Length: 140
Image 1 (spheres, rainbow, N blue to C red):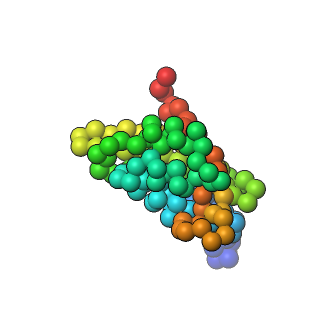
Image 2: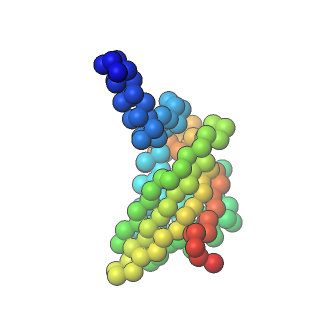
Image 3: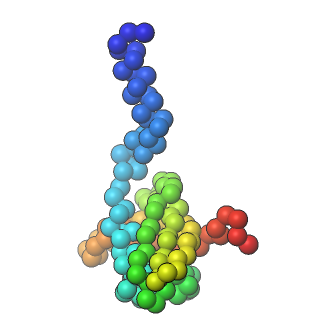
């Protein structure tokens, strides 16, 4: 095997082992600020702060999800993006939330449709267009 063949094989192996590296430029949108705002809303700010991230205006589903997800006294909410699919001008995300309070924790899975914030809107640059809590596998 030539040196060039080895380098090509290593590069291809890196793409297979690192699916994030294969994302297109469009998929590279930075959604971390939005996820950080969701975490802050569910940690200390409360359901109203979550609803402020929803466009065009808070909906009954956003109010219900925020009320279910908000745990008074939560010490930390960790959010992990598990999947991202392009959806028109935005994305469909699958995220997992780990909410900690004292010596208890709970995990939930959400599906969010996000799109760019309206022009002139305060940060973050992305807003939630739809949200849905998904069942955790293995739980009824």
